[in-house]
Each structure stands twice: as structure tokens, then as C-alpha cells.
Image: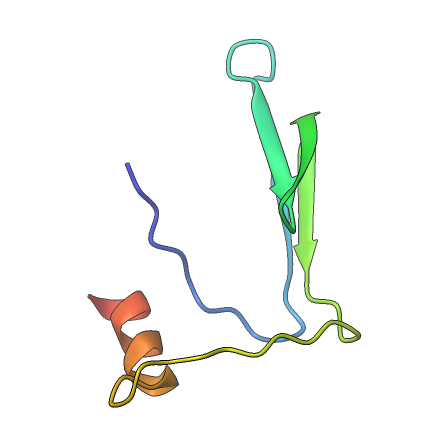
Length: 71
């Protein structure tokens, strides 16, 4: 049941719509903040937000990307 995710282009815009909200209510979180029950969610990157990503020595970004996509 766990969706492992996917890597998307920087300019990707994703919309997820809840088809049967009465039967299967959906809650969403954004940046650690709950948005409550939703009928649709739109996801895109914000160019004005930056994060520092840290890795253990010998386990860099390339290895992580390959593992997330293909393993």
C-alpha cells in the first residue's frame, strides 16, 4: 500500500482529486501544517523556498535518487 513516490521535473504541477469524498474522506498536510479534509490538492514547487539536504559520507544524492525511483 505504500506508494514510494516519483521524481518530477522542477516545473511539474500535480492535481489530485478525491472522487468519492463521502465514502473515502482525504486529509492533506503541506509543509507540516494540516489542511484538513480536502476535495482536491494541487502540488508545485516554490522557487523562493530553499532547503539544505544533508547526506552521510559515501551516500550521496545520486544514490538516493536511484534507490527511490527503481528499488
